[in-house]
Length: 163
Image (cartoon, rainbow, N blue to C red; front, side, top):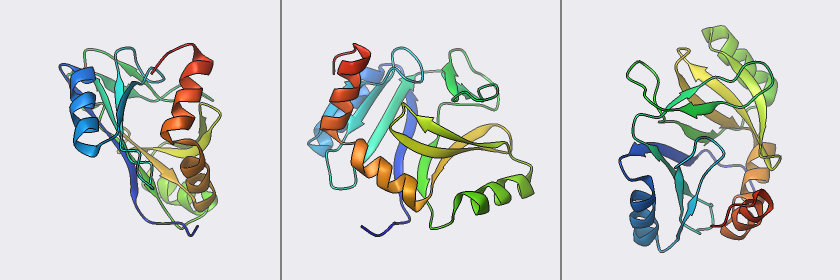
């Protein structure tokens, strides 16, 4: 499959993440499932479509912060500053080195991360406060192969968290 320029997922915060995810999943004809990798109480709506579209819903006030060294970004409660839970994953036709060069040119922190040992992303912190995940064509293929409803359910079972 050719790589596409697209947004793979978005995140928002809400007072009742489970309910919001369930309503979005209902509108899509998909499913809602817990999303514990970033912060407790998070949920995800999965469309179950050919692009594996998802919406992550974090508890209101969750902010994403850059992990130290070789660690993923994570969510913490109680934000009122420049950070938030809002982020997106996007596809690019560029390679890893090109994406890193652009981020560094802008002075934005950037690093490669393997999310849950299932797909890779380049984690870029726009202006040092807002995270975007950029997926090269190879990373897009990993994402499409693994971020299916069935794939997510397997991952949750392996983590001991039911969907």
